[in-house]
Image (cartoon, rainbow, N blue to C red; front, side, top):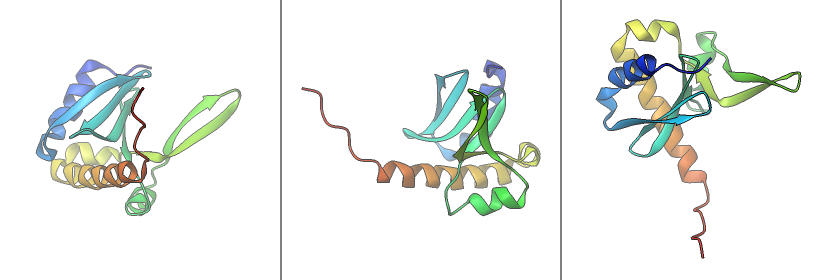
Length: 120
């Protein structure tokens, strides 16, 4: 199921306190960026935040699971993005706090990437 424009706009509104939040269509959903750093995915009207060792425990404590999909008869888990707890949609301050932790995880991941070589 593709992410709807309404849900994408709703998520952007929730995340306004982070700063300049943008989305970019990808696959059947969208990537969510703040100042050029991807920190969330919207797939099938479900929000997933970027996770690393610093914030993974909070998701596990809430009983959340990483994003997964079916391919060639097996389930593939993408451990760097976990589903956002539903309760956060009713708790805007907590949503922004979790989003800040996801953004920090995205910034750490971006810092570990090697710079791309310029095209000749």
